[in-house]
Image (cartoon, rainbow, N blue to C red; front, side, top):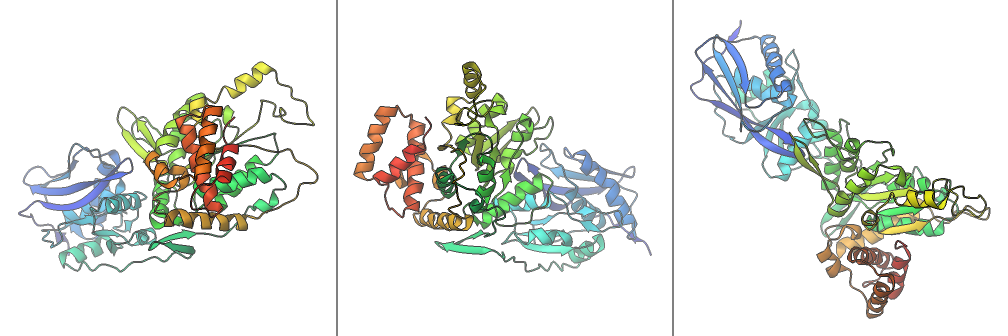
Length: 511
């Protein structure tokens, strides 16, 4: 027997959401049934995928025994001045059409889900970023979601989820007021440390080991310091001296992640169209030097898309052959390196993405790469070398904390330290930073935080003042030296920055 929809006496509503950049905006989905020519329309700046959902809703309801009434059905997505997109609007649209009257105790019930033509409720890649953003804004407590989405939604705590598999099940739950939530929790199967009642997670898997790199003692020491504080790091050396090898191994020894940081990384991966594994490992992004500005920073003519800088959030952005990147890209990189935010401005979209990353770069000393070689002759003219180095401006280089010139390979070189040993030092340094009350790592400290946490002993202060006079250090250079010295002091278990800590930090400055 066919089910016939009755005409409700009130305007029915559900809550849903739409993304504006990385931030979710709450959308009220409301419907009315009025006398007039039979129609089904959606208003409120709905995108084409939402307009197409009308056909999915019709098919899903008709194949499950419902008959549309000869009425004018109008669905409004409010507020009407915000552009909405996403197939996750299917389920709230279908529930509004299918139910006679909604009289829920929960006024703040959110509904997400994509519909199949047979009425099955499917997951959408937008559901996780939406719910995570709503939780960060403290705007969601309970939500109806697809059962298959629980696989990744279980990572988000403090939200009550009602999981459904089909449109019939969702209709029955709401009509009978049987909105029983599922108790969902996820336990990370990874190593962890607890500091000040907060947990941090990490993996101890070293697919690429620093022990494979022979020699390069100074570069490996600089890599350890950079990893401890997430300092921006530039390596210069002849081809084949190990620059790329070091960058690939850096990712395995980075500091642990909090749960919020793991979820933030997963949100960016969902927006990029990939399914995250939620492993507590920081991302490593290594775009080619021929990459466009839009692919590095994000862009798009209508909707702003996420780029490599945002995908490297909480991880490493590695530029190999640094001078070969477009000058526009290198200059545009100054803002995210300084402010840890990348802004995308288009006619139809202005959004901001978090870019709290560690920038690692590698370059040759000259176009042919043999300028520093004691064996191979350099084929470059002075003009070519000058033009090559002038691709990197002083303001850009000022945002890099550690500079290292790689040594040439020697037959007597031997391995001296493993990734496991280096990672243990990073973990100990991380614990000292967090116990000191820092909210972020040394390489990302603000000016005010530098003055508070980077305290120098009297001899170190005298040495810094002498260096300022001798080398003509800029304000930004002084801040970088203090941050690097603070990390070295943490590695040496010093409460305050000593003179040896500062001298080592000065050895890594740009010359």
